[in-house]
Amino acid sequence: MTNMKTQMSGLATNGVLRAAINTGNRALVQVIDGVPLGVSPALARRLADEIGAQLSPVIYDGAGKVFNDAQADVWDVGFLAIDSIRAEKVSFTRPYHTIEATYAVRIGGPVQGVEDVDRAGITVLTSTGSAYDMHLTASLEHAQLQRSGTPTESFAEFRQGNADVVAGVRASLERFFRNDPNVQVLDGVLTKVEQAMVLPGADNPLITALDDFVARAITDGFVASETGA
Image 1 (tube, helix red, strand yellow):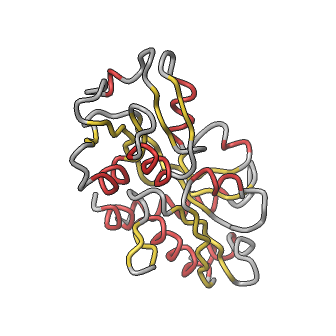
Image 2 (cartoon, rainbow, N blue to C red):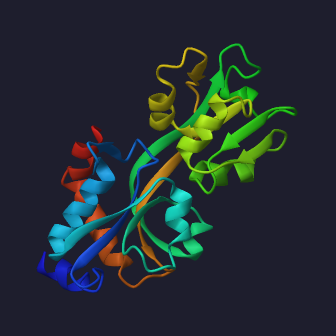
């Protein structure tokens, strides 16, 4: 542990660990009474404790915004889905959790399953800069892709009538549309997204020590206890 603290001593800023927390991903973060809970905040708190720093959450409502600030010196450590494009600006640890992305559709609409989505005439709405936005950008061949704001903003636009389907993390879609009798979240999977801790900059020299931290958190059962796995 002493070695860990020594290796990571340069991570905190003046004794404060600024951790980017994306509240737009319900599978990783749940805000209760204004307090961010879930596996990502828990990992941030554990890291701060281990390196002897004070934790200062930097709150975002979308992964794209976290990534956009990677070079702005406003956070020291973050949590993002692993992606080769993002790797040009941030360094990733090994994944600590894998989550599912899927679609919400209107009941009685033209899409009944995930396999129905990529067709001519179908419009897919996605949150700008999300991991599933990147996946859809690379994989859709026939459907039209629209991007809009944070996950919550894109869900709200879909509810107001925009697009035929909206993409999102399953847990976030289920929470937003749980009381909507006109919308269902599909059982099928759009993509599985590997979540990792990140540091600003490609090839950040501290990423090996942070990866060791994640490995320990997985091995000793900490991640499983926070995700309910």
